[in-house]
Length: 292
Image 1 (cartoon, rainbow, N blue to C red):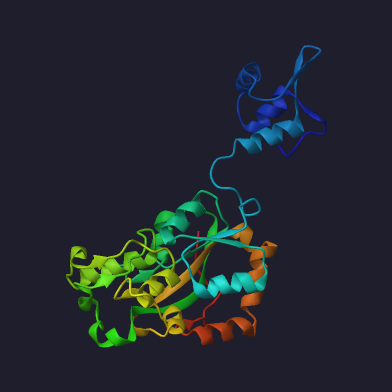
Image 2: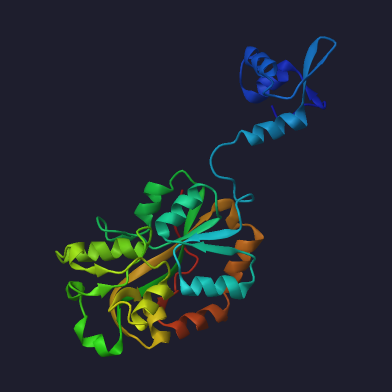
């Protein structure tokens, strides 16, 4: 049934619309759960109010057109710059890949930036979204490859070149919801280094804050991005080329704000910015890496 020719639905029409037995319609009306009127002994249901009531009963996250215009997930300096420069109207709420995925599932944003390494397959993000976000009508878009490694002050450059050198060092930690923390603990385990052998600071919540902790002498080293270490004049030893991808609601992908961001990212300005920051590979930007 696609709709009634009249403003009001009969019991039979409403049962057809809801795909329930007519007895259930009488129960709904008697309980006051659906709007109805009794005219000449018959129950009539205002179709507009009924459809609004049906929409209010929807569970799960909002669709793409109703999701808040917010990008969630992990912090990326290039993405942050692009959102600002493109004037696309999107806001950022960045508190780690795991946090972003959970908030995305709850409908709190239209996209989430992710860089989650899967140790079993040595891949990035796909296994994570298949496990955590498979119920979403979403696609995973490539954003960039990013060089991540050990960031130290110049005077300490020769003392921290490999993961095993972290034992006994004061390391600027990231929050447990972050992809960086997931990766660091995998790297430590791969070298047989217990996490207790590393002196972690209190967690900091952005890439800049992690590197700033080293620059200010609050930590000896952090697992940071080359693009962030460079402006601070810090030493950088590359360890991995990680993938940063964006999980976006399929409906929101076609809406004006996200399309405005993508249009800006196809301009020479983004490539110039990525080159200036250093440590980025954006050759595959915008390619679909996974879809529900």
